[in-house]
Amino acid sequence: MKAPLFLLLAIAAASFAAPLVGAVAGIDPNMVDLLDRLSGPSLMHPLGTDELGRDVLVRLLGGGRVSLVIGVAAALAAAALGTLVGLAAGYLGGWTDRVLMRGTDAIIALPLLPLLIVLAALDLHKLGLPERVIQSDEISVIRIVALAVLVGWTTAARLVRGATLVTRNRDFVRAARSLGAGVPHILWLHILPNVLGPLIVATTLSVGDVILFESVLSFLGLGVQPPLSSWGSMLSNAQELIATAPMLAVYPGLLIFLTVVACNLLGDRLQQRVDPAAASRRWSTKKNRRAERGGERAPGPL
Amino acid sequence: MIRYTAIRLVEIAAILVLLSFIVYALIGLMPGDPIDLMRSSDPRMSAADAARLKALYGLDQPLLLRYAGWARQALAGDLGYSRLFSVPVWGALLPRLGNSLMLMLPSFVLAFALALGLGTAAARRPGSRLDAAVNLFCFAGISLPTFWLALILILVFAAGLGWLPASGIATAGINDAADRLRHLVLPVATLTLVSAASYTRYVRAAMREALAQDHIRTARAKGASEARVVLHHALRSALVPVTTILALSFGGLVSGALVTETMFGYPGMGKLIFDAVMGNDYNLALAALLLAAAVTMAANLAADLAYAWLDPRVSYR
Image 1 (cartoon, rainbow over the protein chains, first blue to last red):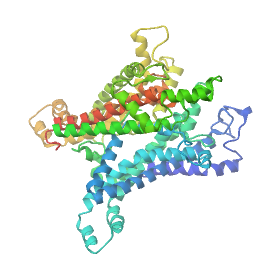
Image 2: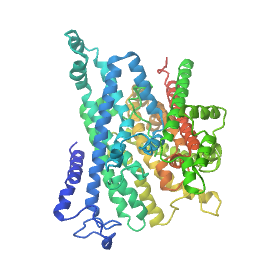
Image 3: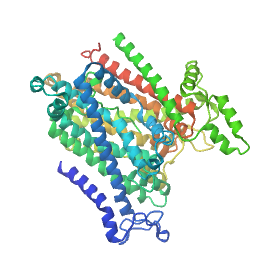
Image 4: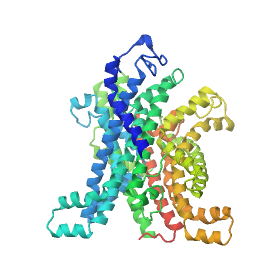
């Protein structure tokens, strides 16, 4: 548990401290120096410079900030949305449950990447968003987070629904209800705490997934746009220079890899703490009904 | 069972109809418009010409009417013309489908073979050094950005050692099987490594569950050899959940592997869908997306049915 957590914290701390370090060392991540392009490691630039003479290390750390923010924001938002859906489906039951769960099933059954490409390529002008929003630097980040949430909420929804179904007729919930507790009170105070553990595990795991997802979108040119940069966009830029400066592609990939491995390991260890039985179940499919497949998507090749 | 299958089929049809409408509407929201594109590339075209063309193609009609028109034609088997490739949609789709199968099928088989071997070996000795190594392989595989792995493979085997071609499907002018095979090696290796990692986790979990069952102890007590216990007794019950995963992954055969195809310049379904969406090729994008969705959902249904068929304890109402 400690090693992956430590690794994650180290990467996050370095990424968020990057602007400070850059300012102290007098390095601007966007400072172009055409006379000092693609140079090797030096004291001034520990990892060398890129095709525009920008410092690779500072840019990597700055890119990490964008990647991590996207990963955490999307994972949290997806968990929140999924929790709402799961609570509604599980507690209200009946038609609400049926409709919501059919919707979830449908989303899980679809080939997602091609559909996401369509969504990622939409013309925001035609959606009627205000110009100020479309022109802002962060729009590409917001778009990725929105897409990741759109795919990612199903896991949380299934988890929460399952736990709600189990909990809602337990004695302590019935007691609360008979004492006149309102629905929001019961959901928030009596049902949600029971699913918090698995929910935290799922969210941790999905941070890694989102970071991978962001890198794929960026790789396809649909991700983070300049002036912002993320590990994914740095990696796809570096691809054109693969013959002359292979290390430019190796660094961001390595950081993505380390971060995602850390998230996955952390999630796995957390799961062993929270629910040792579920930890061994996570990769098994010994669940007889489709509805109980736990929102696990078939491992699709990319 | 028949009732269950029928309900599921109706559901799939309903989702496809809904999806086709959503995608149809979404494609209308993409940047660019075919007629505007024509206009910008032909200065002699006037606004009146553009309006006439829009009327000719029905682009001035409301969305629902246009969709209904498309749906009527599609149901009659006419998917229209691909603007990007200037051939009927089926003509653009089928060769790519063939390419995709050629890429995905070997990776699929290899990944499963690898997963069965590694997963079984790891499950036999939980906690051993081998188990830890397999676990590491799994974690690495699911955490690796596919295109980065592809990049590294290209760097090492194509750019560095020069053993294999980095991209394409065949060398221009050469038309033999060996050349095509050489072009397949790196993309297949990429896909195999990435998917083997997640398959292995499933196999390992299933095998561990299977090996813990009572009939395994009985088999050992009867003096069955270790190979017979593992291969005959345990593997059989472990294969039930694994088959489900196998069927679930089948959809990928048709939707392709966009990232890998892009990295290796391989003309498969993933790249086709991507190019069609990006190039405003309505007809092709719709047809390809719906085909991919239909096959994926059919594979999901097959997975559920296979599960019930293999494990008699499971029944669907």
